[in-house]
Length: 397
Image 1 (cartoon, rainbow, N blue to C red):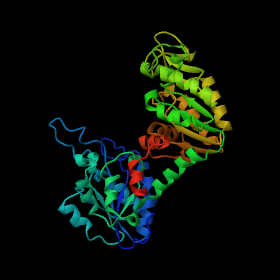
Image 2 (image 1 turned 45 degrees about the vertical axis):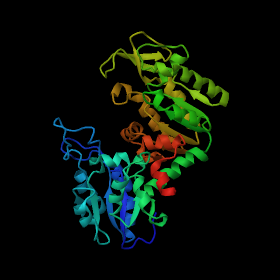
Image 3 (image 1 turned 90 degrees about the vertical axis):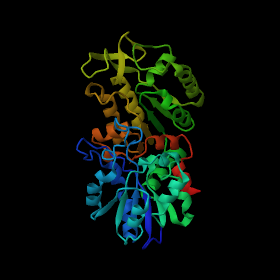
């Protein structure tokens, strides 16, 4: 974190892209809560804070008449909760650039907090526009990036703006520091055995992650819809289960590579299969490679749960990304929930990331027993894949 910021205006990039209900009330405050320690530290050190963030995709989801829905995508909806959490007034600026915005932020007193309007109201944000970033930079004497969830984007407010601050006047926030440290802990010096659990629908989303973990994981668990591409690669019968035919050969290669590297590639031996993609469908247990025609796998079965739990019990390090079934449907949630509880009972270090995985941990009531829950979805995946994230590089370079 920055030092010597007494009396300085700190421009702080945060991730306030929180879910809202129809009444514009926040339904999950996690992203705000996780950045509060950074904000409190900055205030305690005598700074004023100018917050900037994106909110949704207003330019992609315009109204029928082609205009931006400035009410639906306004950050003003987070002001009441933020003010209550910080115990002080939070000013709101109806724009993030321009003379009016600058007039509000130019003469802030120590302890004051201003939230700028959604940066994504401007296409220049996602385009990483240098002039737009320069206008944002005018708000602060220093810059702090605490938005790990957006660190993989080379946007104006997440990386380009850092170019306008000297090295001594830019830093990560406490959350970013924690995110980076915990991800590196898994990648560089994991306690053994290291167990990686990957779920979700598509192999294509996790290829690079699986390949990366072949280098240092002892066990890689493949669950969720993407497991059926692997079963097809082994010439199994998968019925109507999700399968990416274009990736069957790659799945076959990954199976062989796991053998070559001495990695235990653990696929679910059995599945809960259904005759329709519905919570009211008929369902039964089936070997995962012997699924009846017309049926589809929607969850891991009891033997698969037992096998994965056995690996978890022995693990010194666990990384989990992606649900192991269609956990949004109660009849197909057991596998994901059981694994979440098993990870929570492990005495080693656990890192959980990705929206669905985090939602499952929260739903199972064990979030407080997980070693570290990442706020990053795509950012965490790319970081674990070994990619250089623009939001991190901008501070470190």
